[in-house]
Image (cartoon, rainbow, N blue to C red; front, side, top):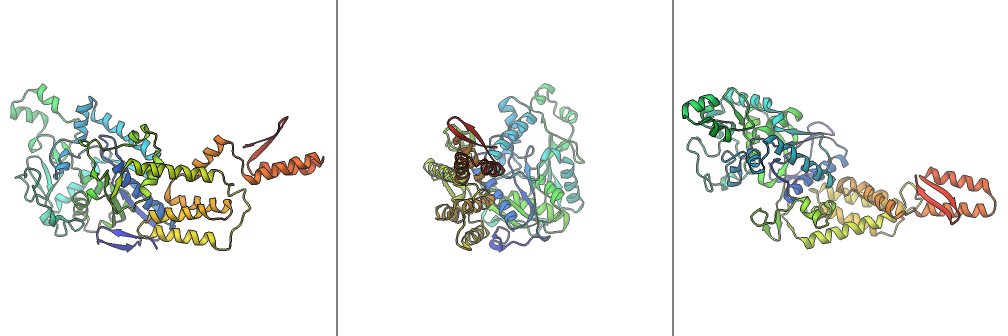
Length: 491
């Protein structure tokens, strides 16, 4: 039985889905204003391991991940997500592009890196800008139920009207305004924006010019590129509303699992819960799973320290993205992980050793080797127990290596490894086949059949030789007779 730490109840629980063997799962994805870094990708890898573990346990999973391309403000870095500039608009100014071009470019890079880490593609990537109507509709529902109020810069959620607010987080340990100037228009400093106005009081662009006497050209330079009409005025959605609106659209008003980084546990996710449950009157999500931070050489990652590494940064130093995935697996997802290049060297060497080793083995389909009864079943049971024990990937990885080092026939070993890799996601089958192709390695059983065919030919037993050729071809290989002897290639 799969069990993992539920951040909502703050304890490890056995997982039970709402519908038998069917799971709705939502993962908080990136804000596509810049390159995702190795800390972000640890979070997405954790979600991927959970997804794979669910499937390994027989569940059919509907997996959704968002792409935030509007509304995430820079104030989030300082503790108030309703202050500062929109990250997309700021990046557009920085790079001399439109906000839409920024979103497209960084989304494409993210998806490329996503594939390099062998992360499972969600059933749907959902963009905030594609779901403005759903977000407006959700704000309207909250307004009709009396959970909102208006300020000069937007429509806000009144957290005092939602008694359960903050049950997911440790809000009692957070002091409002400790790092940012307190917004005097908020009724409570934990209240948050549902809809932000492009201009004060939700007035139109023309009204703003008339009221302020501003020069048109001057205002146009700062005019938002991403804005929409709403019942409250021209503006854009707050950061938090998108995830509630989109997850409920695709997974229902109550669904099974929501994942994200530990940094979202204190504000973003409590806000999601508040606005969703206030609107529907139903429980929003049953299980919340959060991945821990990555340190770099014992320090927090930041641009100012120059230790915020991307997949591209690692590739420039000749590291494989799958070596990074291997490194992630060595630390359980709830433990803070310390990234060092020495550790990455070790992970890359171990991964290369693993792939090179199994590339020398016979394919499971061509091997006739056996092992003592129950030995591989025991390996698989222990592996599943490790996976189901709060996604203990470090233990699962150790059991995989036990299989590699065991004295049994390589064919059954390889079959077991490939099964385990359905959870670990190290792409072992494809990577080992690539090495076989490059090195021209022929499995031992095929080579034995080729030698036996040669012997039959020397004895002029051509019918027997033809039968052996047919058997070789059935196993996926071709034999071409040359002056230097038979040449064997994979079909």
